[in-house]
Amino acid sequence: MRLRHLEVVNAIRIMGTLSGAARLLHMTQPAVTQILQSAEKQLGYDLFRRTRGRLEPTAEALVIFPELESLDRQVVKLQQLTANLQSGEASQLRVLASPALAQSVMPQILTRFLRKHPDARVVVRTEYSSKVIADLALREADIGLVFDSERHPAIEFVPLADIPLVAVGPRGSFRAGQPIALDALLAKPLVAPDTTDPIWRVLSQTCEQHGWPLHSRLSIKLYQAAMAAAASGLGVTVVDAWTARSADHAILDVAPIRPLLTVPVGVVRAATASQSGFASDFIAFCRDVLSS
Image (tube, rainbow, N blue to C red; front, side, top):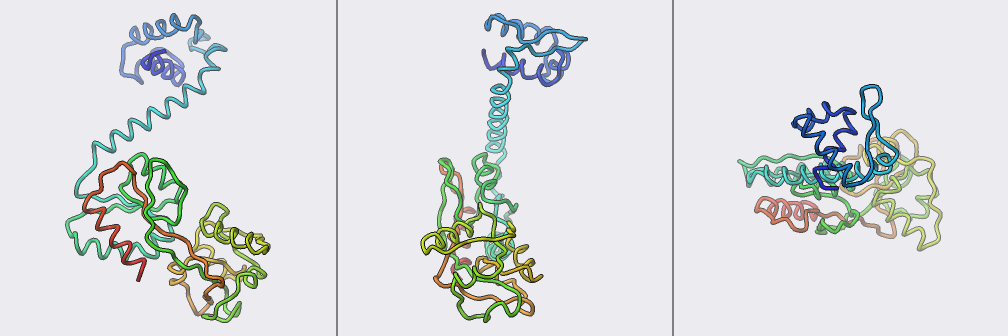
């Protein structure tokens, strides 16, 4: 089947009639009929049968449809990608950031960036790492700021800093400012990060190396929400040091963890994309802020 055949068959699948498919594709009904007949002739079997005024798929068509739907999603992604490439604006920087970094470090980065580029337009969206990677692959953004993320062949990860992890708990959980041993921390009720989170990976790898148990009855994906749960007395949690800067010390204790644990932070971008001066400056400001 040719691509045009697939397009028409998919439109009929969606609309259920030849006239509906014609409207969807901005074609005439006779043209849709002709292409369907051509596809069925090439295949050697019918794809639809008329039932009470609608076209119902045959058994053969039902086998084809899952692959057809997958191909249609790929075509939509391709159309979206080409449109994004065509509509890129030189004076605009589209940034994706993980929620914790968007709240903790992004304001300082943007302040420095916009001071240097007062005429620039910056669009910032918060997404978790997997969505950041997917959107960058589709060129729906120019750059992303994330904790250590999954690797993708079309995406480049540029490490910028290793951020220490710290313990956060309700007042009296431990001696604020004094290091706490990780095994002692984990003996307390833990508000854990999500199991897909980079902080969880660091914790689980460290615990596995030392033979320490890692259990939690409560996990929360958003770091700020985990700190709020800790403030409510639900347990202690582990977050990056930047996020912990927003902790209310009237109700929360913050302490370093021993052994020292860190989580990498970096920028991600399309591996084949040419880097604008805006993107280069943004990366430089990210590095400066994260190292401060």
